[in-house]
Length: 55
Image: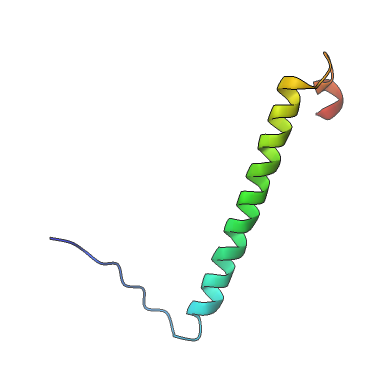
C-alpha cells in the first residue's frame, strides 16, 4: 500500500513556499560549492601553518 502525503496549504501560499524552498536550496548549493573550493585550496595550495590565518 502506498501513502501519499498531502499538504493542506492555501493555493496562494504554495507558490511562495516553493520560491522560499528554491532560494534555500540555491543558497545551500552555493555554500557547498564554496566549501568544496576552500577544501581543495587547503589540501593543494595552502602553505604550512596557513590554516592559523584562515581560522
